[in-house]
Image 1 (cartoon, rainbow, N blue to C red):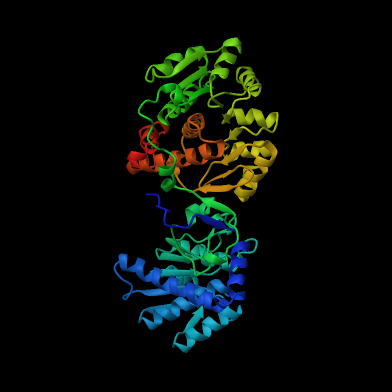
Image 2: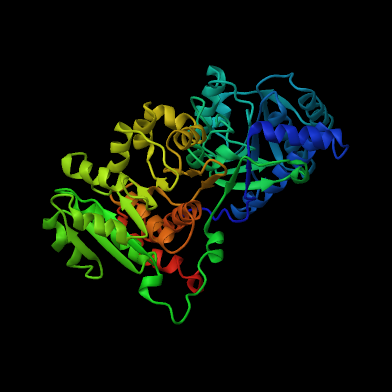
Length: 499
């Protein structure tokens, strides 16, 4: 079951922005650096006690605390001291006996409380019941060192319940990628500000349940780098329709795709447009696909196209928004339709093979939405999928700069950028990793654009509707979830009285 992240702040920050806020808080006398460590350690103690209470209590357990030599380790040492004061057994394991000034202060306070410390041993980690991960936090530089990587592997091989402080050790704060290896946390307690990488890429798999302690830093942030969105935003976008509204006022969408053998893609995208509220939807596809499209969804208007003729251009002109790409193919039929849409001045959504065709003939346009998955993004930028996933924020910026418009990069924690604002949508689940789910998303976005949302609004809201529909559908299980399973939940989510 996906975590409800609505209680987390919406502002997301880079590591540098958080450091600047900490420095400003200290400069203005609100705290000292060690004072911030004390606050973080106290928050960790409270978080640990709360979650262990849900698991039968902490009094009978020994808490193994893995301590790095930086401020993340200092946070862990403060937590250890507070556990000791509360009469809870701790086993503190140090990577090093010296470290930052804050580490030295926290270690002295812990030892003065009567605590003891030992070097880190993998056999002790493997036998632990509860682990506090204070190894690295945001202090990863390059790849995790071999000796630390061995300890992280031991954490992941253990059966212990794991609390990671600030970030799972091994996760890169700004990108969410893994520095070779990373802790698999049950809970991550993020300090000061939510790191933008925590909600996307590999961090989505490693972070477990995310909690937040602001440490009093919130007033000291000048700007955020990105914003988080989720289901809670939908109530602001779907007011009840006027009682005298009619289909012509609810948006007209033309969807183009479905070359031979790929009728399902355009069928799914076009039904999603209807379920997202479009009043009139036309499908342009191969003539032999009319039965597939209309037999179970007669509400869709259909035009069979063998050649791009005047009738095709009329249907492009009729539409308020064009969705191009689901099942389009890269042969002459799809390419000719791609060129025809390029002559239109209508807002459009490009997906699937339309993006692959665009990568062969790059151009920049302001009134479109591009919806690549990492493989399509790699083709658009002429690089590898690994390059895309190494920094999803940089990738979406590069695509927007090259192609214009609004660009969304699909994946665990979809990233959206319009040249001005960066959005992260940590919605959805692995059930979306099946054929047709991307086609459904493009149909939703096209429908929302046709109903009057601007391109950025429609993209962000569309991603949230799509991901939340998947989360609702996943109640019956992620494995085996189909793109068509999303349809009833899309309808629910675009009606404010059902939210």
